[in-house]
Amino acid sequence: MADNRGVITTVGRRKLCMAQAGDAELPAITQMAWGAGGVDEAGNPIATTGNEIGLYQELLRKDIESHEYVEEEQTTCRYAATLEAGELDDAYISEMGLYDSEGDLVAYRTFMRKGKDADIPQIYKMDSIF
Image 1 (cartoon, helix red, strand yellow):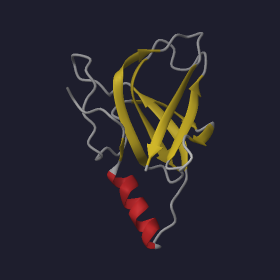
Image 2 (cartoon, one colour):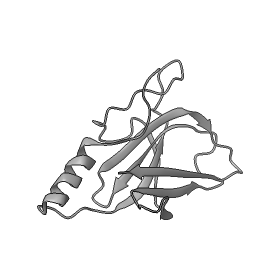
Image 3 (cartoon, one colour):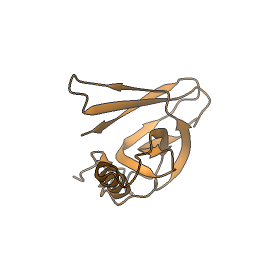
């Protein structure tokens, strides 16, 4: 079975490294994207590598609606965005990613296909864990 857990991409890790060294400012995570390219022909989630620079088959990208720190240490930030009723109707979503304000994919994950009904909103949350 493929390792499809979310990863911080190489681009994201590079930006973190440069920001901690004081050589660059770290841009905020501002958008979430959904796609249909996260599974193989048999419908199994593909392995994440960290080398992804975009979703394999991006369907929609939206601004992050909210974020929260999920524990007292504040080393995990959970970002949330909603696919509203009428968005991606009848689509099968199998990948998602977080993009920063510079338009770079900084976190990526794949998962089993999830259908999107036309009349039901779906709330997606993705954690950035440090």
